[in-house]
Image (cartoon, rainbow over all chains, first blue to last red; front, side):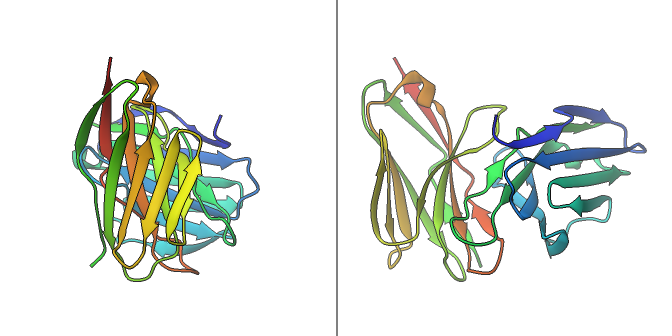
Length: 113
Length: 111
């Protein structure tokens, strides 16, 4: 149990579908992140929310849409994805101040067919 | 640009010592992190260095030299369960949230 929970763990979707990934953290952190992990590539930062305000958006295609309704929950809404979007999507959280290691969820393994 | 380099794969024997190196070039520095990631699982935090020197935590130690842009993770008394990927990450600057990750080093521990 890492304190950061992601659902679903696995998702297969067609290119015309709409789906959402959910992340919940129970650590009292005030920053949350979405990362994409593809084979043989570094973890890519997609979005960061601090105190529910988006503070980083790393040129991610608009077919990925994040939502942070409160400091404990983070969503990633997906629509009209491409096969190259198949990857492991990791959610993380951290504190804004002080010791700042990020804690990761188990990830959602996404396959776009 | 921002860059973190690690070896892609390493192999070591159970009971041995292994050192995984990481070099980085980032605009600003506010800490270096090591994570362990087993296949299909979440990365888990191992160590944090923000000042030069060695941080020891049980069988794991991490070293940092900021002037050289260099860190290493030292694993002692290797066990089979240490077979995993080890990710080096740098937090680029204070007040930002950019954790820049390397590609990770896949460590295989052989019996």
